[in-house]
Amino acid sequence: MSKTAKTAITPTRHEDYPEWYQQVIRSADLAENSPVRGCMVIKPWGYMMWENVQRVLDGMFKATGHKNAYFPLFIPVSYLEKEAQHVEGFAKECAVVTHSRLQLGEDGKLHPASPLEEPLIVRPTSETIIGEMYARWVQSYRDLPLLINQWANVVRWEMRTRLFLRTAEFLWQEGHTAHATEEEAWEETRKMLDVYAKFAEDYMAMPVLTGEKTPGERFPGAVSTLCIEAMMQDRKALQAGTSHFLGQNFAKASNIRFLDQNGQLSYAWTTSWGVSTRLIGGLIMTHGDDDGLVIPPRLAPSHVVILPVTPKPDSRTAVLEYCAKLKEELQAIQWDGKPLVVELDDRDMRGGDKMWQWVKKGIPLRIEVGPRDLANDAVFMARRDTGEKWSLQRGELLQTVGAVLNQIQANLLQRARDFRSTHTHRIDSKKDFYDFFYAAELGQTGNPRWICPGSLEW
Image: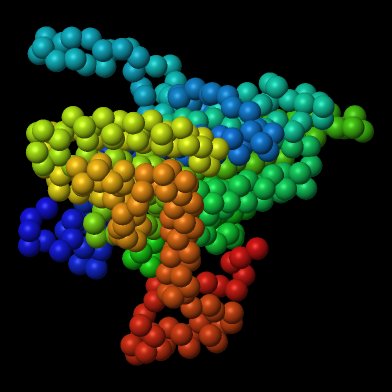
């Protein structure tokens, strides 16, 4: 960072929010565009964040009775054709495989050689292929409910892409369940939406509203789509997770039928629900600032980084030994049910450059140790969320580091709630709606972009 720069990221959020977002991803070393148009390479720091998302959500799914499985990447086109609304909703986004091998031509280039009897779709979502399997597995009411989740990649051939938020290929989980009654399927739909809302607030520190999408925004083929929505720092809403009540539409298309307790043949009631790597984009836009990424401790790849300060060669060995011992002591501390994850950055480079790299990566706590600190058995600590810096004894650090991480997690959630509250105008009637936008047109409201209808929250 140059001496004249006031922030580590340029442009700032206020100057150019979309470009700021891209620069945060680049500066935090989270991901980059791949040679394949519209796809991204998720780098280790970004992928570790996704692994933490997976770990937590996977535990929450299993705690509610779901089990993981895996289904094929390729879906016969005839499967999609069984559900008219579904195929219409995804037709323009489908990547299609038409050949099975390549051969070298006389021009020295590779060409598709063997046409498939039936084209295969690279899954945009898995309702149809999973429905085919459920039709084989479900024969009796005793086989229900069927509660399955898969962690996978999907492809939706987007024309305009943005890292994490919308890419041609992305990572996600998709839950698919089948039930004996409509009531059970609706209970599942709402339950999983609540799981997403709890995860967003408790782990991402991202407050959300829950509600139902309009018919025009509904998942193709669904009876109802519920979602969690969060306000980003540009005061726009981000759809962060969805839970779909599919009724019997997909069951009828896939012939998922069972003998009920009365011996009658009935169609199952199904649901599907999912979140994706879009959550990483939501985290960036909820908490990032003009110095880079800010990560809630409960999802951070590492909680603490130790930065040795060694201005003179004769003190380097002693400082590094002290830091190595401090790392061992910190890693022995349990926080949030697991050991603290601690980085020791002993690279031979300028201390200021190292410090700013970790600021931009958003690590919750930075600890600096130099020769003077060594003499006093003390450290210098900085919080990423507030920028607060202070000196404390090593023993005090070991006793309080968990409490400080708790404070950071809580502060990020409260700060995001306060931001949303400041920029929210609640509208409960048609008159309020027209009055508000008439005033906005006259420049009397500050033109906030977030409108909260009275019916949005459960």
